[in-house]
Length: 304
Image (cartoon, rainbow, N blue to C red):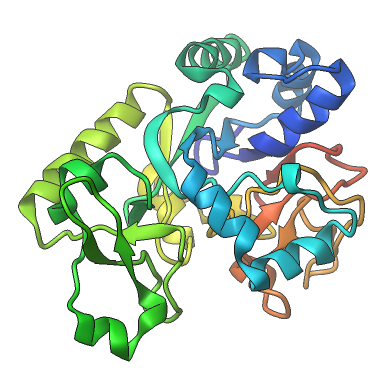
Protein backbone atom coordinates (compact mmCIF):
# COMPACT_ATOMS: atom_id res chain seq x y z
CA UNK A 1 0.00 0.00 0.00
CA UNK A 2 1.30 3.43 -0.91
CA UNK A 3 0.01 6.67 0.64
CA UNK A 4 1.22 8.55 -2.45
CA UNK A 5 -0.42 6.18 -4.92
CA UNK A 6 -3.39 4.44 -3.29
CA UNK A 7 -4.61 1.44 -5.25
CA UNK A 8 -8.20 0.60 -6.11
CA UNK A 9 -9.83 -2.79 -6.63
CA UNK A 10 -13.08 -2.60 -8.61
CA UNK A 11 -15.85 -5.15 -8.22
CA UNK A 12 -18.82 -5.35 -10.59
CA UNK A 13 -21.18 -6.14 -7.75
CA UNK A 14 -24.07 -7.46 -9.80
CA UNK A 15 -21.92 -9.88 -11.77
CA UNK A 16 -20.19 -11.10 -8.63
CA UNK A 17 -23.48 -11.75 -6.81
CA UNK A 18 -24.99 -13.47 -9.86
CA UNK A 19 -22.04 -15.86 -9.99
CA UNK A 20 -22.36 -16.53 -6.26
CA UNK A 21 -26.10 -17.11 -6.64
CA UNK A 22 -25.48 -19.84 -9.17
CA UNK A 23 -22.97 -21.50 -6.87
CA UNK A 24 -25.24 -21.27 -3.82
CA UNK A 25 -28.47 -22.14 -5.62
CA UNK A 26 -30.23 -19.11 -4.15
CA UNK A 27 -30.08 -15.30 -4.46
CA UNK A 28 -26.80 -14.05 -3.03
CA UNK A 29 -26.22 -10.76 -1.21
CA UNK A 30 -23.13 -8.87 -0.10
CA UNK A 31 -23.11 -11.00 3.04
CA UNK A 32 -22.36 -14.03 0.87
CA UNK A 33 -19.05 -12.67 -0.45
CA UNK A 34 -16.62 -15.18 1.09
CA UNK A 35 -14.19 -14.01 3.73
CA UNK A 36 -11.53 -15.75 1.68
CA UNK A 37 -12.19 -13.43 -1.25
CA UNK A 38 -11.82 -10.34 0.95
CA UNK A 39 -8.66 -11.83 2.44
CA UNK A 40 -7.32 -12.36 -1.08
CA UNK A 41 -7.94 -8.74 -2.08
CA UNK A 42 -6.33 -7.47 1.10
CA UNK A 43 -3.39 -9.76 0.53
CA UNK A 44 -2.79 -8.20 -2.88
CA UNK A 45 -2.05 -4.90 -1.16
CA UNK A 46 -4.98 -2.76 -2.27
CA UNK A 47 -6.19 0.28 -0.34
CA UNK A 48 -9.77 0.67 -1.60
CA UNK A 49 -12.48 -1.69 -2.78
CA UNK A 50 -14.95 -0.05 -5.15
CA UNK A 51 -18.30 -1.82 -5.20
CA UNK A 52 -19.77 -0.71 -8.51
CA UNK A 53 -23.54 -0.23 -8.73
CA UNK A 54 -24.93 -1.13 -5.33
CA UNK A 55 -27.57 1.63 -5.30
CA UNK A 56 -31.29 1.24 -5.71
CA UNK A 57 -32.54 1.23 -9.31
CA UNK A 58 -36.06 0.91 -10.70
CA UNK A 59 -38.12 -0.97 -13.24
CA UNK A 60 -38.12 1.91 -15.73
CA UNK A 61 -34.40 1.61 -16.37
CA UNK A 62 -34.64 -2.14 -16.77
CA UNK A 63 -37.42 -1.75 -19.33
CA UNK A 64 -35.39 0.76 -21.33
CA UNK A 65 -32.29 -1.44 -21.35
CA UNK A 66 -34.33 -4.46 -22.41
CA UNK A 67 -36.15 -2.63 -25.20
CA UNK A 68 -33.32 -0.51 -26.62
CA UNK A 69 -32.39 -2.27 -29.89
CA UNK A 70 -28.87 -0.85 -30.11
CA UNK A 71 -27.99 -1.72 -26.53
CA UNK A 72 -29.49 -5.19 -26.83
CA UNK A 73 -27.38 -5.90 -29.89
CA UNK A 74 -24.27 -5.01 -27.88
CA UNK A 75 -25.38 -7.18 -24.98
CA UNK A 76 -25.81 -10.14 -27.34
CA UNK A 77 -22.34 -9.52 -28.78
CA UNK A 78 -20.94 -9.99 -25.28
CA UNK A 79 -23.32 -12.74 -24.15
CA UNK A 80 -24.52 -14.77 -27.17
CA UNK A 81 -26.87 -16.73 -24.89
CA UNK A 82 -28.34 -13.55 -23.37
CA UNK A 83 -31.66 -13.99 -21.60
CA UNK A 84 -34.08 -11.48 -20.09
CA UNK A 85 -32.92 -12.12 -16.52
CA UNK A 86 -29.41 -10.99 -17.44
CA UNK A 87 -30.50 -7.39 -18.04
CA UNK A 88 -30.87 -5.53 -14.77
CA UNK A 89 -30.85 -2.01 -16.21
CA UNK A 90 -28.12 0.57 -15.80
CA UNK A 91 -26.60 0.74 -12.36
CA UNK A 92 -26.35 4.49 -12.88
CA UNK A 93 -30.08 5.04 -13.46
CA UNK A 94 -30.46 5.54 -9.72
CA UNK A 95 -33.74 5.85 -7.83
CA UNK A 96 -32.16 6.30 -4.41
CA UNK A 97 -28.79 6.26 -2.65
CA UNK A 98 -29.61 3.30 -0.44
CA UNK A 99 -28.33 -0.18 -1.17
CA UNK A 100 -30.57 -2.15 -3.51
CA UNK A 101 -32.58 -4.90 -1.77
CA UNK A 102 -31.10 -7.38 -4.24
CA UNK A 103 -27.61 -6.83 -2.79
CA UNK A 104 -28.89 -7.12 0.77
CA UNK A 105 -29.94 -3.55 1.50
CA UNK A 106 -28.39 -1.01 3.85
CA UNK A 107 -27.60 -3.49 6.62
CA UNK A 108 -25.64 -5.83 4.35
CA UNK A 109 -23.69 -2.91 2.91
CA UNK A 110 -22.76 -1.73 6.42
CA UNK A 111 -21.64 -5.23 7.40
CA UNK A 112 -19.52 -5.47 4.24
CA UNK A 113 -17.87 -2.17 5.06
CA UNK A 114 -16.98 -3.46 8.52
CA UNK A 115 -15.58 -6.67 7.03
CA UNK A 116 -13.40 -4.63 4.69
CA UNK A 117 -12.23 -2.31 7.48
CA UNK A 118 -11.22 -5.30 9.58
CA UNK A 119 -8.79 -6.16 6.77
CA UNK A 120 -7.43 -2.64 6.39
CA UNK A 121 -9.51 -1.93 3.28
CA UNK A 122 -11.64 1.14 2.60
CA UNK A 123 -14.98 1.09 0.81
CA UNK A 124 -15.64 3.33 -2.21
CA UNK A 125 -19.12 3.88 -3.65
CA UNK A 126 -20.57 5.67 -6.68
CA UNK A 127 -22.02 9.18 -6.90
CA UNK A 128 -23.69 10.19 -10.17
CA UNK A 129 -24.42 13.93 -9.98
CA UNK A 130 -25.42 14.36 -13.62
CA UNK A 131 -28.78 12.60 -13.63
CA UNK A 132 -31.32 10.37 -11.92
CA UNK A 133 -33.55 7.53 -13.08
CA UNK A 134 -36.82 8.07 -14.94
CA UNK A 135 -38.71 6.74 -11.91
CA UNK A 136 -36.87 8.60 -9.14
CA UNK A 137 -39.34 9.93 -6.51
CA UNK A 138 -38.30 13.50 -7.33
CA UNK A 139 -40.09 13.23 -10.67
CA UNK A 140 -43.37 13.35 -8.78
CA UNK A 141 -42.37 15.56 -5.87
CA UNK A 142 -39.78 17.93 -7.36
CA UNK A 143 -39.92 18.05 -11.18
CA UNK A 144 -38.22 21.46 -10.93
CA UNK A 145 -35.01 19.62 -9.98
CA UNK A 146 -34.72 18.53 -13.61
CA UNK A 147 -34.05 20.32 -16.89
CA UNK A 148 -37.38 21.05 -18.49
CA UNK A 149 -38.13 21.70 -22.15
CA UNK A 150 -40.75 22.92 -24.56
CA UNK A 151 -42.15 21.07 -27.53
CA UNK A 152 -39.89 23.05 -29.86
CA UNK A 153 -36.78 21.56 -28.19
CA UNK A 154 -38.28 18.10 -28.41
CA UNK A 155 -39.05 18.57 -32.09
CA UNK A 156 -35.47 19.60 -32.81
CA UNK A 157 -33.85 16.78 -30.81
CA UNK A 158 -36.48 14.18 -29.85
CA UNK A 159 -33.82 11.74 -28.66
CA UNK A 160 -32.88 14.11 -25.85
CA UNK A 161 -36.31 14.66 -24.28
CA UNK A 162 -39.19 12.62 -22.94
CA UNK A 163 -42.68 13.13 -21.58
CA UNK A 164 -42.77 11.86 -18.01
CA UNK A 165 -46.07 10.74 -16.56
CA UNK A 166 -46.96 12.17 -13.15
CA UNK A 167 -50.03 12.02 -10.96
CA UNK A 168 -49.93 15.82 -10.83
CA UNK A 169 -49.60 16.26 -14.56
CA UNK A 170 -47.14 15.08 -17.19
CA UNK A 171 -43.97 17.11 -17.82
CA UNK A 172 -41.48 17.27 -20.68
CA UNK A 173 -37.96 16.76 -19.32
CA UNK A 174 -34.47 16.31 -20.72
CA UNK A 175 -32.65 13.01 -20.62
CA UNK A 176 -29.34 12.91 -18.80
CA UNK A 177 -26.51 13.20 -21.28
CA UNK A 178 -22.91 13.85 -22.10
CA UNK A 179 -22.88 17.07 -24.17
CA UNK A 180 -21.16 15.23 -27.04
CA UNK A 181 -23.68 12.39 -27.27
CA UNK A 182 -27.41 11.82 -27.39
CA UNK A 183 -29.36 11.56 -24.14
CA UNK A 184 -29.44 8.35 -22.11
CA UNK A 185 -33.09 7.30 -22.37
CA UNK A 186 -33.21 5.72 -18.91
CA UNK A 187 -32.28 8.97 -17.10
CA UNK A 188 -33.34 12.58 -16.50
CA UNK A 189 -30.92 15.53 -16.43
CA UNK A 190 -30.60 17.38 -13.14
CA UNK A 191 -30.82 21.18 -13.31
CA UNK A 192 -28.03 22.75 -11.28
CA UNK A 193 -29.21 26.23 -12.20
CA UNK A 194 -31.85 25.60 -9.55
CA UNK A 195 -30.40 26.22 -6.04
CA UNK A 196 -32.87 23.69 -4.65
CA UNK A 197 -31.32 20.99 -6.86
CA UNK A 198 -27.88 21.91 -5.58
CA UNK A 199 -29.01 21.58 -1.97
CA UNK A 200 -30.78 18.30 -2.66
CA UNK A 201 -27.72 16.77 -4.28
CA UNK A 202 -25.46 17.95 -1.47
CA UNK A 203 -27.83 16.07 0.80
CA UNK A 204 -27.52 12.95 -1.36
CA UNK A 205 -23.73 13.17 -1.29
CA UNK A 206 -23.79 13.35 2.51
CA UNK A 207 -26.03 10.28 2.60
CA UNK A 208 -23.48 8.38 0.52
CA UNK A 209 -20.57 9.59 2.63
CA UNK A 210 -22.17 8.10 5.74
CA UNK A 211 -22.10 4.68 4.10
CA UNK A 212 -18.51 4.45 2.85
CA UNK A 213 -14.94 5.70 3.19
CA UNK A 214 -14.57 7.32 -0.26
CA UNK A 215 -16.94 8.56 -2.94
CA UNK A 216 -16.29 8.28 -6.65
CA UNK A 217 -17.97 11.05 -8.61
CA UNK A 218 -18.91 9.96 -12.10
CA UNK A 219 -18.56 12.78 -14.58
CA UNK A 220 -19.94 12.75 -18.11
CA UNK A 221 -16.87 10.89 -19.31
CA UNK A 222 -15.65 9.23 -16.12
CA UNK A 223 -12.29 10.98 -16.30
CA UNK A 224 -9.20 10.58 -14.16
CA UNK A 225 -10.18 13.87 -12.56
CA UNK A 226 -13.03 12.08 -10.84
CA UNK A 227 -10.65 9.89 -8.88
CA UNK A 228 -8.16 12.67 -8.21
CA UNK A 229 -10.96 14.75 -6.71
CA UNK A 230 -11.62 12.21 -4.00
CA UNK A 231 -8.35 10.38 -3.43
CA UNK A 232 -5.79 13.15 -3.89
CA UNK A 233 -3.68 14.61 -6.71
CA UNK A 234 -1.38 11.62 -7.04
CA UNK A 235 -4.08 9.09 -7.80
CA UNK A 236 -4.15 9.12 -11.61
CA UNK A 237 -1.90 6.02 -11.95
CA UNK A 238 -4.57 4.05 -10.11
CA UNK A 239 -6.54 4.03 -13.35
CA UNK A 240 -4.26 1.50 -14.99
CA UNK A 241 -6.08 0.04 -17.98
CA UNK A 242 -9.08 2.31 -17.71
CA UNK A 243 -11.97 3.68 -15.71
CA UNK A 244 -15.68 2.94 -16.25
CA UNK A 245 -17.71 5.92 -17.37
CA UNK A 246 -21.07 4.24 -17.26
CA UNK A 247 -22.33 0.74 -16.53
CA UNK A 248 -24.67 0.85 -19.50
CA UNK A 249 -26.60 -2.36 -19.25
CA UNK A 250 -26.10 -3.69 -15.80
CA UNK A 251 -25.79 -7.11 -17.43
CA UNK A 252 -25.64 -9.57 -14.57
CA UNK A 253 -23.44 -12.31 -16.06
CA UNK A 254 -19.86 -12.41 -17.18
CA UNK A 255 -18.67 -13.31 -20.63
CA UNK A 256 -15.88 -15.87 -20.61
CA UNK A 257 -13.91 -14.16 -23.38
CA UNK A 258 -10.99 -12.09 -22.04
CA UNK A 259 -10.01 -8.92 -23.86
CA UNK A 260 -6.66 -7.20 -24.30
CA UNK A 261 -5.98 -3.51 -23.87
CA UNK A 262 -4.14 -1.26 -26.29
CA UNK A 263 -1.10 -1.57 -24.04
CA UNK A 264 -1.02 -5.33 -24.65
CA UNK A 265 -1.94 -6.37 -21.13
CA UNK A 266 -5.20 -8.18 -20.32
CA UNK A 267 -8.16 -5.91 -19.85
CA UNK A 268 -9.25 -5.69 -16.24
CA UNK A 269 -12.16 -8.07 -16.72
CA UNK A 270 -14.47 -5.75 -18.59
CA UNK A 271 -16.73 -5.66 -21.58
CA UNK A 272 -17.07 -2.49 -23.61
CA UNK A 273 -20.46 -1.10 -24.56
CA UNK A 274 -20.30 2.04 -26.69
CA UNK A 275 -16.55 2.53 -26.75
CA UNK A 276 -15.65 -0.27 -29.13
CA UNK A 277 -12.66 0.68 -31.24
CA UNK A 278 -11.54 3.46 -28.89
CA UNK A 279 -8.78 3.46 -26.33
CA UNK A 280 -9.44 1.40 -23.22
CA UNK A 281 -9.62 4.47 -21.00
CA UNK A 282 -12.67 5.70 -22.96
CA UNK A 283 -14.65 2.50 -22.83
CA UNK A 284 -17.98 2.31 -21.11
CA UNK A 285 -18.20 -0.92 -19.19
CA UNK A 286 -21.29 -2.92 -18.58
CA UNK A 287 -20.28 -6.54 -18.16
CA UNK A 288 -17.38 -8.21 -16.43
CA UNK A 289 -15.16 -10.56 -18.42
CA UNK A 290 -13.31 -13.44 -16.82
CA UNK A 291 -9.56 -13.14 -16.44
CA UNK A 292 -7.19 -15.79 -15.10
CA UNK A 293 -5.36 -13.12 -13.12
CA UNK A 294 -8.36 -11.67 -11.34
CA UNK A 295 -11.00 -14.39 -11.28
CA UNK A 296 -14.39 -14.43 -12.94
CA UNK A 297 -16.21 -11.93 -10.81
CA UNK A 298 -14.00 -8.98 -10.00
CA UNK A 299 -11.58 -6.59 -11.62
CA UNK A 300 -8.74 -4.41 -10.48
CA UNK A 301 -6.92 -1.28 -11.47
CA UNK A 302 -3.47 -0.64 -10.07
CA UNK A 303 -0.65 1.80 -10.36
CA UNK A 304 1.48 0.98 -13.38
